[in-house]
Length: 85
Image (cartoon, rainbow, N blue to C red; front, side, top):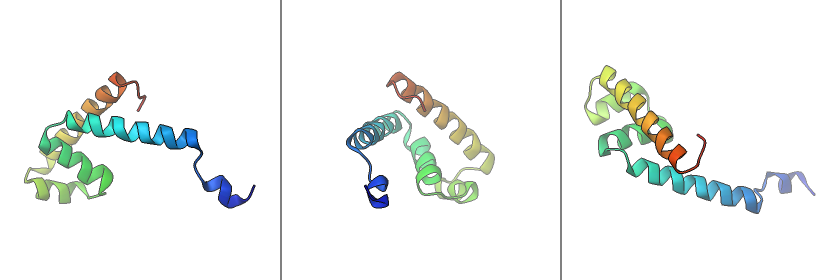
């Protein structure tokens, strides 16, 4: 086995990653469009809080509350789906 082989995901990991991705996608649909946008912009796109607040046109404090509630909702949705976030 070479080092390159160790970097390749096995079938179990690939299956788990696919299941997790589907669970996250489903959980995201439970969020409102604004909340979903905020989470994706932060967690996927890596935008700063200030950039996101400007993008979705909310005050910075509101954005922080939106993200907190959205993350909690995602956590609950994932736990309901049997995923331990």
